[in-house]
Length: 635
Ligand code: PRX
Image (cartoon, rainbow, N blue to C red; front, side):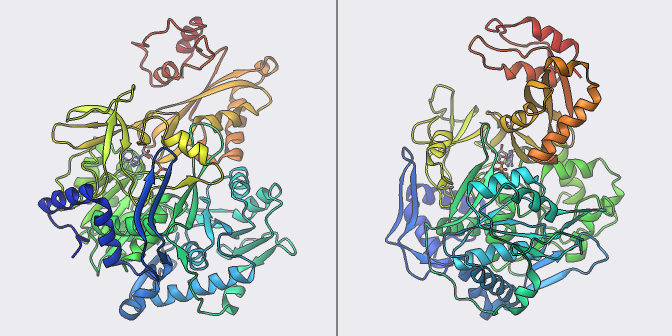
């Protein structure tokens, strides 16, 4: 029997050792005993990080929807698969059973097929958190199409870039979305994006807000009538374990977003196995992850991981502050949520509000609390632990990335003793290493360095869509035979890991990865701007906020500064989305640069953080005088 469900610390260590000593045998056992395959693999793993090439379960055939849907029908057909909790608490929640979900997925799959979508085609999904979103991911998987979900908060520009990068011919969207007291015209954003996407032939539109929208003749169709007419069964396409399942874009420190490609077999095995253990999910539990399916957290831990385990997973359309700051806790009480998984930024925002919002709800159903997306600070950890968990529900601080597909470093609740701000121990099968700047591994405890992973795990991304070289350069070139995460970490005296933050030019704002270069590019397109540099600075709710240093062209200098600030943020909103707006914009006459022309961001970061006592070595600067001026006028 494989160790699918780990229940105590000794077992963790024993299973961990087993998974590291003989990873192939370990994962083979898990894959064999807990999933359905149409054909078994010829080879469990082949890998070469120098190319890089990683293949898990090569030769195996499967469809992930067999595992997430069909196999549950005989025993869990009437069990709720998805609880849809709408934005407005007065609208009734929807309980979708496994049987109903199966039917919805089949109908959607048939609609896609009717629109010419075939195995290997890319489908862009730009939908809010409504059931159609989860259904469309699974419908793509059913027919072997590759989904590319774009978070419905991204701008038309960002959407167009992603549609074109992966050459999507079809877009699934809605007439709009509800977010708290606002409604958003998603279809308008799609229309604008498609002006730059000549390859898109079909747009299927779900009705959600009854918005008054434009429907382009010959291109746009309402989804519901098509679904109603479609056949309610659809044969699952037989996929290779290494066939792509989806593309999901993530920001890089430079250039265009990276379309991370995840494949089918390994992703399924790893997300399901981590879900079961990291949340200690049991058959009758109700699990809720508050992320949006537009991010990897939603892909792996709202859709695939939970459904592969036959779990009940909550999909929440709304926001934590509407109609009031008690909304999360009201939903926990209403659906008797057992596992609750959210982001530190949400916790910090709610911790600022009156405790009554938490206290008036019955949270006694909670057994496990999760955190993801950024480091959780000590204060937020204690607030979460004391007020939500009542010191009774372990907090799993889960470290992972879009690229890793699944949770990598995390406590296992009721198994690993937790410690505030520590992601604690590597998950089963994960072999972390801390490296110094010259490429030496830092062995032993009480060391800090750059976090790498030495050995492949089943859900590692296999490439960047259309750019394998960038994949190699970004993740496998910094250290030989290692996957480099881009994060710094320390390992304490007992071997616990604490993630200290990014060591590259990616800034995490409210749990969202933002690359500095694309934001700078969009600012620089403003006609009055000559050059700019973005850095992060600590923010008590968002974790980090953005500080922009902007050099104006001569003619811009006469313009009103506040108007310019608004225009710059407007420009960023249009190019990337409101999440990338700058909190502070300082106009400067120059930027500190090295003799080779590189901006010294270290100095700018210190100034933005109001920590100018020790700026370090500035002797290599070409223009040290500019530093004084920037400090003097800092905001
Ligand atoms: O810096 C780490 C941070 O988020 C980055 C990955 O972001 P993304 O690909 O958007 O995926 C987020 C959801 C998995 C990481 O490189 N990060 C994520 N989780 C944690 C974290 N930092 C500290 N602690 C965490 N638990």
